[in-house]
Image (cartoon, rainbow, N blue to C red; front, side, top):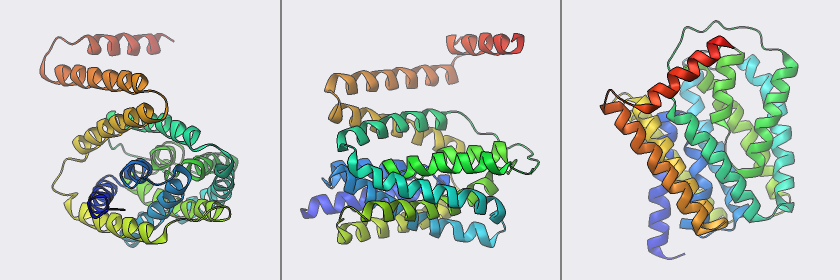
Length: 293
């Protein structure tokens, strides 16, 4: 790796860490493309390194949440074992899946995550309730399997699930999610290490940079509007998904994805500035249809 590539990799890793510190999750979904394209790492090794980055950064991020009482350890104890077991299985299975297939799957997950981030998340008064153990185990296993296969922490799936199913407030859902994400990331990493080797020097460099960024992001969180930041990050994730599709499928597919992303961005920008917006009419009709149903 050249000096310029190393510097670029570290800078991007710090940016990923900052997003993790600000958003409480989501930044890890950029780690695999970062390692694959900026650091020129093989897809399966990039996923394994990503799990290390996610695990360590989530551990660091969970500490202040635990000190503030924003971790529900009983819920984490239900989700954790299922997620860890499935993540380990996912890590072992990833060895048998072609790298291109993994990256295309990753791009699909990125599109789902980016789209979810573009929707405003309003904090509501949550009533904490008992989560059915079977449902918790199933959900934990599903998130863990995804995490082990593609190297993303799964916070974009886990946080909404904890908020909706367990009735946790968003801060508590984030804190609890970080504990589960850390545990399943280490399990997924163990699954990968059973069949492959990684560049520990590069992994340590990226992890250190991401943790430093996460600490910085945690300090900046009071100065930046979280909803605006989440939307901006959502657009960035969609743009990165277009890059992955262009590299792994075909440039035309990537260009089409990028064009759709740009069109949606311009439409949302126009709707935020002008009163007459077709998207509002479609949303109104959709709400009326749902109410009638």
